[in-house]
Amino acid sequence: MDIVAILKGLTIAALPIILAITMHEVAHGWTAYKLGDPTAKSMGRLTLNPLAHIDPVGTVLLPIILFILSKGTFMFGSAKPVPVNFNNLRNPKRDMALVAAAGPFANVLISIISLVILRVLEHIFVGNTIGNGSQMVLVPVFGMLEYSIIFNIFLAAFNLLPIPPLDGGRIVVSLLPHRQAYEFSKVEPYGIFIVLILWFTGIAKYIIAPIQIFIVFIVEGVSTILGRIL
Image 1 (tube, rainbow, N blue to C red):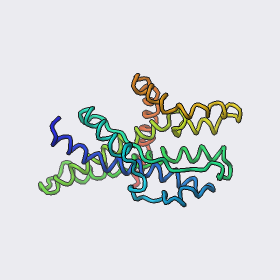
Image 2 (cartoon, rainbow, N blue to C red):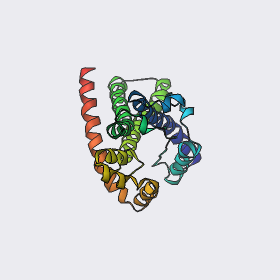
Image 3 (cartoon, rainbow, N blue to C red):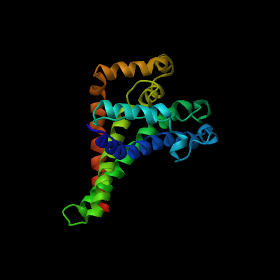
Image 4 (cartoon, rainbow, N blue to C red):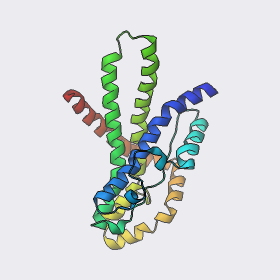
């Protein structure tokens, strides 16, 4: 892959990634705030300004490295985690699950919206004669929407892996009885290493794939219904 193709791919992927991780973190913080924890709000993290959520490594360096190493076939990024004090939540055990689920839910919602917009634009423009100027705009827009769908589905599925501190792990902790939840939560300090091992051994894809299939089913179904209404 030449440098021009790399830069073109990065340009198309950058906005969907930034939007996805920003909305993911804001959803966590907003849900926590509504359930009694003002930590994220007091720290200025309930903003859609991506600068408040960008992590130099996870948001900038990591995606670029992965994109280059994979020759443009894969890119993944993360933002600074939104701080949540679970002790402030009105019902800490139950609300932990709601706060954790809010991030992936936001990504699923973005996927649905992106797919609906893509189908509307395809219905309007595909097959119709349009000028070169319009094509120069539409081609990257289509690319961004397609990447937004794929990336948000993957991000939601990845975060639903049942390993603390990922969202899926926190949901599991909140659903287990207190004793089992306490024992399972001890995994958290080692969670990132477990995820890395699963990822590099290829085991993670067998766990993520069924979650992705389920999310795709939801995204396709809801977007089809919305498309008929619109």
